[in-house]
Length: 371
Image 1: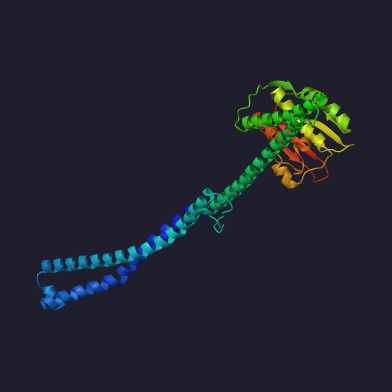
Image 2: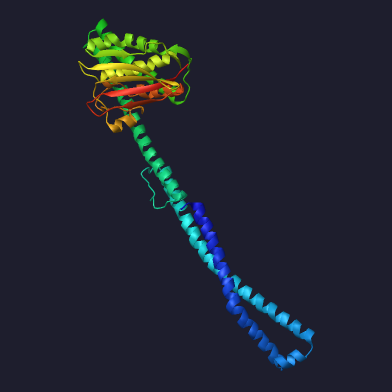
């Protein structure tokens, strides 16, 4: 039952109790009290009812009216006191039932604010408080995951920075000590490590702009098949070098989409690069275009290592890697898919991944609005 329903029922219960007490008072207390007043009146006057009826009628009626009013006031006073006590007890009980979950929520929120993200509330109600409790627990679980990702982010960034810095430092110390010769090859190695640092910094800056919705987009009508063709042509030499096939399944007629050409080429390059990275020799990657309603769907399907269900839900989180053992040189920094998601969503589309399971390949889809 909803909280509003419980409150309405509680009010009705209090009203019903008050009416019941008033009815009981009228039925039992008022007659007895009225009889007592009448007896007192007869005793004080020393007359019987018959004698009283023979006396001055106006005086008699006045005394009857006074006794009736006193009786009614006494009955109402007793009923009011009893109803107040019962209503107070019921209100206290009902308010405790309402306030208790709020107190628990306040206490748990204080623990969350202090960094105890594993705080949870018992879900034993089916009303709005139960829904609030479930929302609070979901929020706490999201905070736990965010904190875990934050710690992983710091560790990953530290690792990504540490590796090339240590390499550069080692080369420079070797050059200073004369252990490593000052050859163009040595300087090329140092330069390559510096480029790795620069690429990581550029990725982080791009991610920061993407998550802050500050990406500059030059959206205009463009040919979707041309986007795919150019992206495939750019990366085909890398596919040939690794021995992985790259195929396209495109519509015969040109279909225009609203897109920033450079940004969507960046998305395609990232998805194709991932497909190439996780597809072994002899495998195949296929790019498909499918029109559905007012959107064009881009699909990159590979025959690679596949994804587990948990990976499908988290693959677009920053710095998340399916294979935690892979370094940047082999598995990327885990930023590219996050940036791709923000780019696609900034275009008004969406991006998602599908896979039958580990070892069975995967497919990445994203949509763009038609021009």
